[in-house]
Length: 114
Image (cartoon, rainbow, N blue to C red; front, side, top):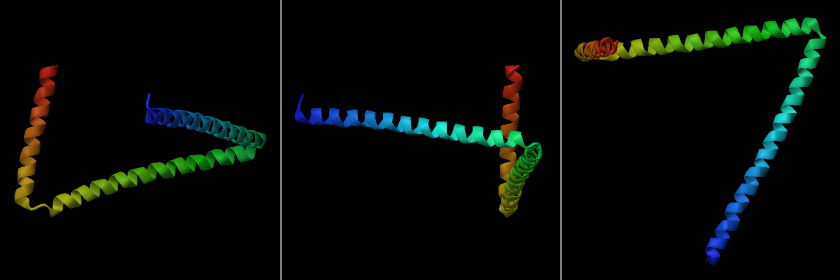
């Protein structure tokens, strides 16, 4: 074993040690998060009014997130429509023809499988 090989082995061994240390730090962080969650749940359970209010607000947030996702989907659709409007008519006709052929092919393949 050359000196360089020995040096390389020492360096790689150090990486394993660092990875182990990171694993321990992450595990401790998870334990701390779990303890904080436990404490928060305990406080919420102690106060029925706060519990109901918290539940309502989480529901509002989830509804808002769903509306946001829907708005993004509609925006994507509008962007696609705009993109199609910008395409010259001859290209649109060609695209429609190619898409129709592709759809027919896929439908035929599906029918053959069944």
